[in-house]
Image (cartoon, rainbow, N blue to C red; front, side):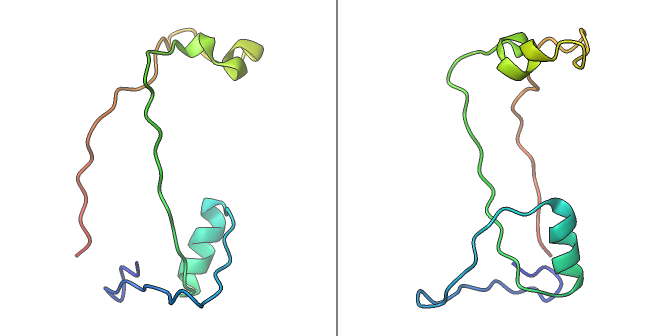
Length: 83
């Protein structure tokens, strides 16, 4: 999706695409250089309630995480548009 040009590009199946993960800095650099960038956004649904301190990373590094964070942020809908 090229918001500036208001276009959506659908590559042909025979086109070879480079699929790799890149950081936001690389995305910004590619967009600034007007390169073709394909993005996929995915989300995971948590089927059961998970306490933050049940996460292995939080348990291992308790000194890094504040005590006042008791739960994961609530799920919410976000509205957006491309004009």
